[in-house]
Amino acid sequence: MQMIKEFKSGGDHFGNFLDSVVDRKRDGLNGEVREGHLSAALAHLGNISYFMGEDNKVSTEVLRSELGKVKSLDNNIETVERTIKHLEKNGVDLEKYPVALGPYLKFDPEQEVFTNNNAANAYLGREYRAGFVCPTADKV
Image (cartoon, rainbow, N blue to C red):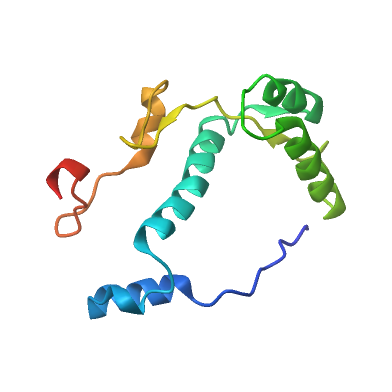
């Protein structure tokens, strides 16, 4: 069984955030709230595409081909090559555990919605239990 290496550095950011919420003091935060939101959002957006394409396992050749078609500020092929090399170096058998290729999602960072996939927008929130409702941006 392949074990995931654990990163143990940087402090308890989650605990720090919860402590600051309880104390209601921003000055005790390790980082700005917006920076934390953006950092977490980036991972969430990738996970949304993954979950939507979880059943779409592809070879590394298909991954290279598809991501080579996407316009980006980065070199997508170089990123794919680094990722494949990293996975192989860490013992991941990509024949046995192929990568999943989710749908190409366009995201509007101002509105915080996907502009080309309404089904993906359902992953941006959830039904909240009474007493724990998170208001939408227009009601804050």
